[in-house]
Each structure stands twice: as structure tokens, then as C-alpha cells.
Amino acid sequence: MLTEMTTVYRKSIALYTFVESNAPTYLSTQDGKTAEQLAKLCHVSVDRFHRLLNYMRSLGVLLEKDDKFYLTEQCSSLSDPNSLETLHIKFELDSINWNSWAKYNASLNKENNKSAFEINHHEKFFDYFGHEKNKILKDNFDNLMSKVTNIMNEYIIEHIPLHNISSVIDVGGGYGALAKRIKENYPNIRCAVMDQYDFIKQESEGITFINGDFFSAIPSGYDAYCMKNVLHNWPDERVTDILKNCHQAMHKDSTLYIIDMIKEQSNAEAESFDLYMDVLLLGKERYQFELEALVKQVGLTITNIYKIGGSKTGGPQYVIEIKK
Image (cartoon, rainbow, N blue to C red; front, side, top):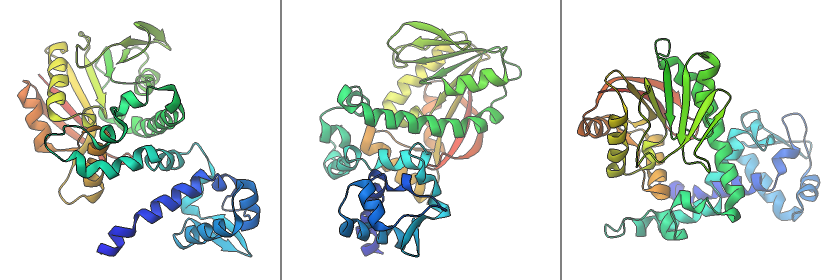
């Protein structure tokens, strides 16, 4: 067991190298290439690349037939450079994130109060992505989040009772994918999105985009407030600040819907993602009792919890319904 845990990183880095070489874009389950053809297309050393291809074959990423390599059915999505799986590999295993894990041990020092990412790059995660030089990685991240959002939105809408509400705001809602999906299904609902933009207020596709900071204030007057994958980005004291602002913005009949992972005992996938959030952001995935305590602390109450499935990049996701 310990040997496998020690060496498993080899699989990750080999897979990342294979994807970064662009070799998968020249392959499919039906269209194969020889090692020589792929090496030429990817501008790499044929002998060494052949060894990488052999390893991908042994891992079940490729199969070999008549000296040609093909993507297996299970890994066929890698032929698309914009597939969720490709984007996930290229973002999570990029050296900018990967190297941060080397600082994880240092970040545990209780006097540090910095994420491993911040120790490694001397900047917080989201600040780092604000620089023009990191635009490609930021675009990969945004595209990945958009893919995850589009998958989750169908499930989210099924579990949020929207028939009897007249207005909804997605707090920290980015480009408005969830709000747009709501508007498509319920055109009479007044939809808004609040996030940090380079404008004050803007209308698009019937949706109001509002520039704001959820640590400062959240717009009032909405029947439903949504926050998807926001709270897990922050430590407990910052989550309390966000929830206080939600409480202040909500009227007596408003409902807050938090969409996030809930950790479960002995769920290795969720526990692993919890560490990932800690390394990048000092964020955390929480057990149900931890969420309940934070919500109760600001005078709110959890009234319902709906499991909506996995995000494909982490553990199971839930819609958590909260009232005053």
C-alpha cells in the first residue's frame, strides 16, 4: 500500500505530459497512429515518447493494435481539447498547482496562516490569476468551471422550487451560467448575478449583472439567493462573514440555496478534495454538522438538504436550503 501511495504521482504526471503533448487530439477509438507518427506530430523524441505511450497503454488510456495506438473508450474524451476531462487534467496537474503541494507541509505551521499556494507563489490563488501572464491558466480554469457548472445546473434547477418565486440572485455567480439556465426555464423570474466585474451594473440576456463583494454587502430584495461552490473557497471565519451578509440581505420569506459538497466519513474522494481546497485557498469541504453550526451562528436555519450527485472533479454535491 505505501509503495503504491508513494509512486502514484508518476501516473498523474505521465498523464499530464501525454495530454500536454497534444497526442490525444490526433487519436480516437477508431483512428490510430504509430509512435513515429505521433512523435513527429508532437515534435518530440520518438524513443522516449514511445515509452510514455507504452505506459499510457498499461494504464488503460491507450490500446495498441498493429503497431498503432488508439484511445480507449473510457478515455475517448481526451481527443477533445475542450472536454471536461482534458481541462481538468491540464488545470489540476499544471506545475503552478502541482508545485504548491511541495509547500503543504510548511503551510500547516499554525503561525503561517497562508495556503501552500500562497507560500509558493507569494500571492493568493485568485490574485495570482489576475495577471495577464497567467491568462492561459485562468482561461483553462474558467472553461473547466463552466463545464462543471453546465453539468450541475440541470440537477440544481430540479431541486430549487422556482415556481412560486419572482426573483433570484446568484451570489458569486461568475458569467451567469446558472442564472441563464433559470431564465430559460422560467422567463418571468427576475434574475441577477453578483460577482466582481470591471463594470458597476450591466444587463445581458434579461439578467442583471452587479459588481460587488460578498464580504462587504449582498443586494437585498430577492426571493431566492444562490451560492454555488463559494463557501468551500474560504475558511470558517470568512464563511461566517458571507453568511451574515446573506442574512442581512434576505427578507423574512427569502430562501438561501447553498450548492456545495458535504463531506462524509470515510469518503476518500471528498477527503482528498478537502486537502486540495486547503492547499490552493485555505478553503475546506465541510461535514453537515460543521455547516449547520456556521449557519446557526448567524441566525439562519437549514430546512432541507438534497443530494444532487458528483461534480466529476470532486465528491458528491448537495443543495442546502436555508431560511431565516
